[in-house]
Image 1 (cartoon, each protein chain N blue to C red):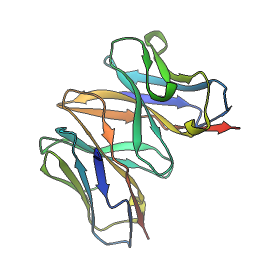
Image 2: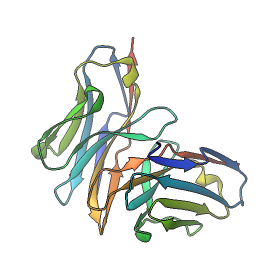
Image 3: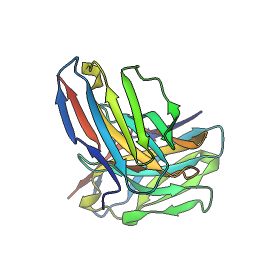
Image 4: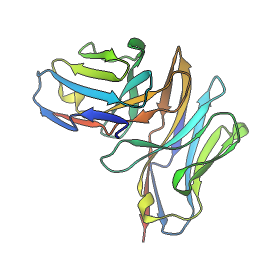
Length: 112
Length: 115
């Protein structure tokens, strides 16, 4: 009965590779988000989708591309991975018009 | 634009002592405020929220927070700390961006509970 799930939980890869992180929510929410948490635990929003439409797109490199096949899924694809991409990536969801967001368990990405 | 400042990146208390984690916010519109807790290697869990109703908000695990507009603060308290409260705590403020509600987080406070 997991509310917001992410796969994989851990991802170790080499520089230059392309990887994807998947997120699914079963809460019936229509808005989903990606956040990045750096090594100092600072959390910053990257993207937000509402009903499969991009709403928030903070300043992130073009190598990051979110894709939302439906309201319950928001995937994050990263091209040409760099050392600085190493972080924990969190997916979250909410209902449009409701302020609280529910977070997934995170994906720890390590780029070597 | 909105921002959050959490005073004290590390706070240590003895078990049974009062927990006080400080949060000050800046917002150009009436804010919605949140406290989240992150246990090691886990995601963020919502502790409590202020959404312009009662200024004293009660959350899970015995935590509460008081919204003080005059001080632009939303400090988190718990009367008696428990060992299981050791975690990272994040204060966040929300502002709308179209149909999405963007959360802006503070830098976090690591709470250590001493036996």
